[in-house]
Length: 267
Ligand code: DER
Image: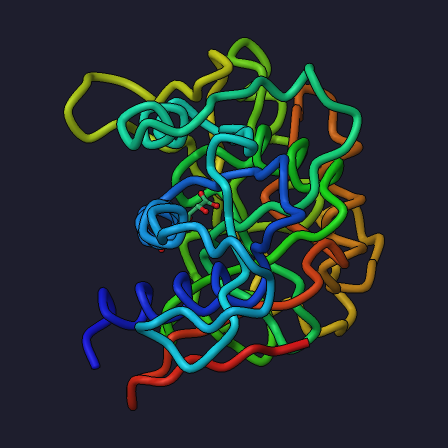
């Protein structure tokens, strides 16, 4: 199965399994996989209403859980997901309107066996993390290339770090002191200079190797445990850092589109 089809498979399964008649406030992540999440939501929401609960839909042998899109509000995690919501005629909400979101479905750049994730390949991880943290349920959808045993195994571009623009050299120096040897300011492709996030900040990508819980020696001869939670804490404490693309203990379940066509939910 192609990577694109495996993204679609994972996205469709997450929507089918977790959105139902009671779902009202839905967070929409960013990236290419969530495009299929919205595609499935629009498909599901177009089904004819069943007047009697329990009545079988003529096209399916399963009771259809009605998803009434008129009753739902969709919260974006980036400019991209905002446009996705608007272009599909879905009700757009804003993050500061709600204390709590029913469910958020989002992509990831890499997911380990404990469902920790590297996110921010699309430089959207600040708003993604805010939306994820106020969601009662946070679900990851990804193609099979994103599934790893430990973070840093396949995604070697580095942990995305959103930084205040005038602080980026300070952050780079601090990462060096932490013992990271492989870091850079993320440069734009069709624009001179660095990429700018939706929040007006820069992104630094820093690779700490495989986050496998081994000892990590910093330049200051201080060691720390190279685990997702420890590395998140170390980076987040650096002056000038706004948010880190490590989502630790956030996801409840992840769906990976597999090469053989089915998708698998990992708890
Ligand atoms: O930036 C992010 O965290 C996005 O969710 C993104 O990286 C997901 O990747 P995708 O384009 O493969 O869905």
